[in-house]
Length: 82
Image (cartoon, rainbow, N blue to C red; front, side, top):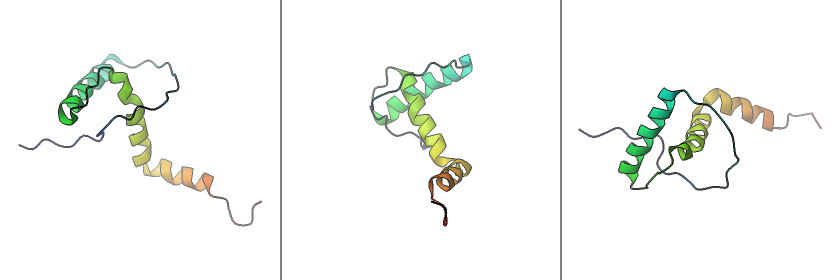
């Protein structure tokens, strides 16, 4: 049986901004499991599952239609304003 594709395919190493967050234990366990599965599927070793948080949030926001639409509307200058 072919396994479904994960939403993340690679983890880009970018200059981070430090955030301190608390995650429920179940979310942390799922993050570890996701990192293990992603490592197996991509061959990219992920030793620190917290590195997945940023790409997951990025992917989530990019695919949230309401967020994208609202953000685009706020960034687009309105006709007659200025």
